[in-house]
Image (cartoon, rainbow, N blue to C red; front, side):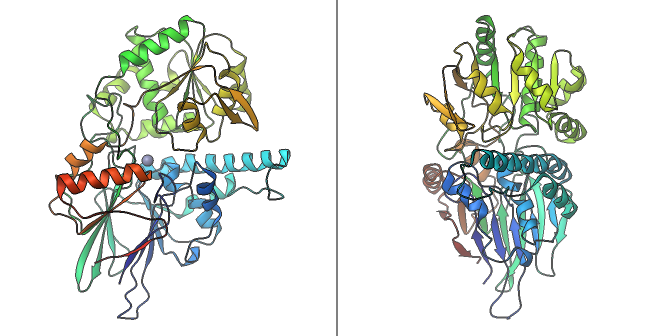
Length: 477
Ligand SMILES: [Zn+2]
């Protein structure tokens, strides 16, 4: 019987990897092995260590990867898979491929930096500490990417086909519909990847891509994310709160430090800042966008205008590209980045990584966290165990580059910018399904989030819902 095996994002929000094995024992034919997503584990050590484990079947025996979107927790293990011998096609939409061409080499660069740091400090039990993969290895794996248009059916073998449909999560993001024969009839599997906001941008202002995942789906087996399974997003416009936080910080002579994923989330936030400056809701202080990939990310973002909401299209029509805006400074080199730290004037610094797991944000926080004048503002999800979650959780100190840094800066979070549907939005979307799936497996959630969403779905929809377990194999009926 064909089966799905959950190789990641089970019991946690990172490391998304779901293996479909189509082998049919009765016919004795070897089946296809297809991986849906190939994400990096992030956060707690017990999870990160799984990045070093081999796949349960040799990487070279995996026939193809189908990628839902370009967040590292969904694509960041691809260079490692290739390093271990995978040579098949990686199917993704063109915007996802463009984003991967930036985020994967950047991830390789961070892996190399981490290894170099551990070797210098001699704090790793491995001697020498090695990167999971390098910048160059991440660049090399670009050759395996194959663009697939949304709603185009791709036949991977006489039996198995798939199709991308909109997930409305980030630029290029899609869900994957898979069709394969089981017991003489075609079975439909739907992998959601991350599900975007379901309602329009009134409650999710600044949303860049169109709201609303594909409606009217049918599925025999549904594999669905549950990141926000136990929390609802605030329903109020975040801009007044954001404006007052920025004004107060500037008034006391401090700077605002925003950890943000360099691609998409940063662009979205830049447009919100620009709009609030033009309407004089916030003062015109310098905005530093500190990431080696920031300019490339803006270019990709500007290229795929077909995915914008009308509001985003209007902002771009009015103000043009962020690279040209006065007072918005893009730091590419390490020297340009260091210069930001020399400035004592109030400013807004947006830097990655978004969960403070690495990157230049570490330098900015290391320098500015001890000063109560400053504000650290979170605009994205913080996975448990990450430095971002520790700072956001109100800890008195945080370890950065081996040193404990006292946290005296103000710490705030704005949850409205989430790109994930919350439980009421999930239900709204699931109610558009044409059938009741035979079984739903919840993945990509902390245990409490997944189990609460499971209870809600059972109660409200009467569906058969299971929470997927790490390495669990489930048959496809
Ligand atoms: Zn995502």
